[in-house]
Amino acid sequence: TGDYFGENALLRDEPRTATIKAVGRLKALKITRDQFVELGLREKLDFPQRKAVGGNVQNIVVKDPTPKTESQRVLISNALKAN
Image 1 (cartoon, rainbow, N blue to C red):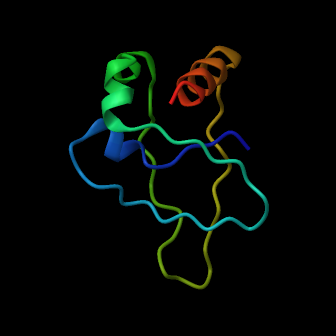
Image 2 (cartoon, rainbow, N blue to C red):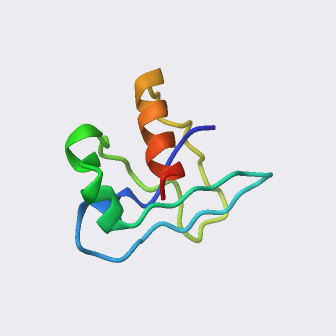
């Protein structure tokens, strides 16, 4: 729980490249690139370099969510709720 996807589209002027498939119920929030920049999140958040978890392969390895501090969770949650 608490992971993200589509960060490359927010950080760069390029289309979203992630394809996500949920294996259960999920709650998803969205933010536009303009809102992301307007809120100054580019400077406030750190997105570690991640490798894709799969891509049209049968044996997909699912990675655990990247750890977040409580302050990061609050910042991301508030930004997305304000969307």
